[in-house]
Picture 1: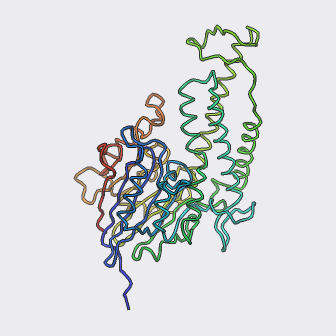
Picture 2 (picture 1 turned 90 degrees about the vertical axis):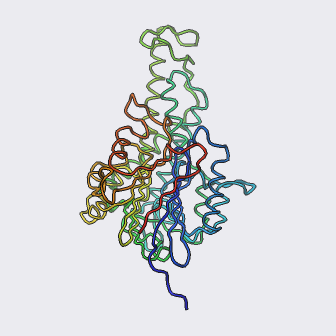
Picture 3 (picture 1 turned 90 degrees about the horizontal axis):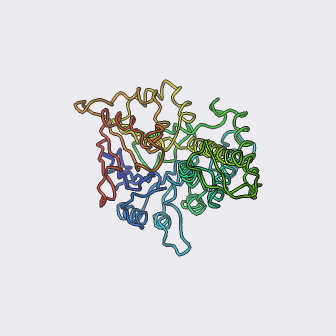
Length: 432
């Protein structure tokens, strides 16, 4: 009779070069055989020098490393930069087809993805973990994003290029990737829809490893996502959706952005000359309102991120997806969790290095960060691409310069944006 494997001796993390996105393969070294867990697989902007088939090459490398069999897939949330690689193709040649063929024993997703609860559910049920109420809001968010991107496809005038670029970036990231979502939902015979404090489903797959689910919370667990706020969010997205879908064009003058916006001399169009300044200002306001809308959408989607903490006898590894403060707040209010987080050895940096996904409370609590001479110094993993999102002038650049300085000074930072062009992944080995 074969004895059950004991705890792994090490974990090797392969941080793949997906540009603006996340893809991490974790290989846990057991005496009988290694176990493989894939955490996210997506991008919204490959490195400029990358080959067009980069995602397929990565999928094939994952298949090679795990010998044709994955143990688990974790899809932290629906954003394209985390799941686009799971998309399939009609001819079966998609990167998602390659991952599907690895037949993972389990797929782990946030509780908001579960399709089988009543529309007014606010917490998981014993039979099914999820909420169609939250899912309805998510569906509306996707449709809002689709309509924003469709609007941008009409080449709207009067919205400056900077606003258009950010609208397109966030809008495309939030569009529902139907092929990837469907593939994740049917890839394995078992799917675990998780929430704060739930079992992860990895207990039997990773003997000797405790996997703590720190997020996302349910609607009943946290005041930051209270019933009234959840209802407001859903009504807001439905309202915005009706507004966007009801538009067939406002018939206003199609005028390009002027060189001197405060002193406009509009040309052509059907509007009377005195009205053209007002029409231009209205278009600019419309772009700013749409930008506010998609920024809010982006934030809500990030707050459904799964947050996992892997714990061995001597090491802790934190993978928080793109979780932002509303997701984090519930966990950070628990002294026991704060104690666990203080002992983190490996931190996967949230949201590609944006400022809003590494709460200062958590960062200050990390006891193992320190200068290069510090024994047992903390490691950080960052998957990102510079110049893709935000600007230095507006202090919105990703990765955020101030955060990069902190990570570089106080952790052993491994970032994909510093990899050589011909390097497919960074390999980090952690003795356990």
